[in-house]
Amino acid sequence: MRRSRVGLTFDDGHVVVTAVRGPGRLEQFRLEPDETLAARLATELDARGLGRPRVRVGIDRSLAVVKTLELPRMASGRLRPMVAFELERHVPFPTQDIRFDCVPVGDAPSDTRRILVMAAEGRTVDGALRLLDTIKRPPQSVTAACHDLPALLSRRHPGGRVVWIHRHGPHTDLLCVDQGAVLLSRRVPTGSDAELAEEITRSLPLADWPECDAIWVSGDEAERMRVALRRGGKRAPVSAPPFGRAGARLIARLPIRRRGAGLLALAVAIGRRRPRLNLLPAAGRPRSMTWTHRLTAGLAATAALLGLGMLLAHGHTQERYLARVSEEIRRLDPGVKAVEQLGAQVLQQKRLLATLHSVETGGLRPLPVLRELTELIPTDAWLQSLAMDRQGLELTGQATAASQLIPLLDGSPSLERVEFTAPVTRVQTKEQFRIRASWEEPAPSRAGPSDGADQ
Image 1 (spheres, rainbow, N blue to C red):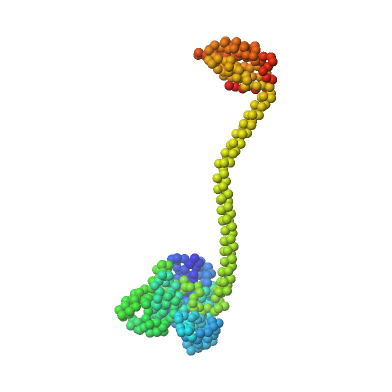
Image 2 (cartoon, rainbow, N blue to C red):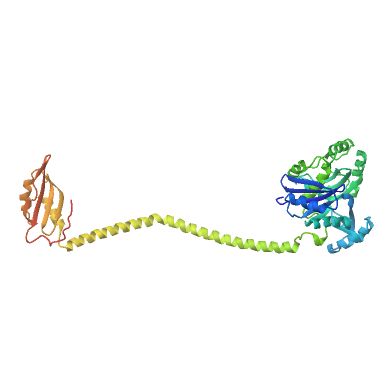
């Protein structure tokens, strides 16, 4: 009940309007009929912010005739003409000014059908519709108010064959309800409790019931009537109707005064949008989908769902493919990184080889010189740096006796003019030296670049 649901009923000449705008949100007010009724009703609806929803109209049971007819089986298109012809013997008003609706009910022999019919005078229905037309509110349905009482029941109620007694003011309505559907309704005299028990017994054959499974009592003086019916020796259990949780919350908000009439008005407001028996002319009813419309809509929805399913399946396939590709990339990633690392090492080796090749082609061959110096220099000396260029080489290092290195290097076939280029200094037990030597002619290798190699 997200949108407002509005019901309009009549109680002792008063107009009762009930609006339900959500769980537990109920508004109900009464208006006296006069020449300004339409204006006052429109003002009340606008002041409460109810918008312009369709209004359900519930007429008093005394203004309608409800009968169960047994008719020969016929095509559904001929049902209403046959019922209209048969109603002439059952209604107390002219059949040319009649509003009626009918619905098949129950089981019957194969050659007959039981039809539940509701009929009312045209002026009764038209008067309510003129009121709604004046206040610019479209009608939803017109039915007997007591027929909407099952809308208040819990969806989990035990069901079965139930006689429902509802008293509102000086009036008492009796309903025969089977599995939540009204099969029969009567306006019974509001007399003694014994007379009420007799009316219950008299109503069972009319509904073609041998017995009932339960008796429900609601409305004004409900508790007193329940106690009286129990004392009357009824074999069926007597109790209050099993109202649903939402219905019970709304019922608790009804005014204490005229609780029975308020309960009827509430049932009309929250009743079915398409009641089984609707006295509203077919031209004024809300449009409803036929079985062909439903079939077409179902086929269209099925096609749309199939198309959506194909798109989702295609997307799912693509996602799975991308997931496999990503998984394969993650699996190959370590190998790729190893190959990249190996490629970087190969590139570094190539650069080193290119450097050595350039040194060799430039005329400077350091490896033979290094081998010769390793053989000449004693083991108690070591070199800190070695620089070679076209003119010669320069050695820096430490030795126990630096002066002994001069004759050793001077005896090399590759060196000449060996001399200290800086004073010899002592560092702890060693002597720090710097020696310069020239290449002996002919030079051991062609002159190369002036780049140095440190050791």
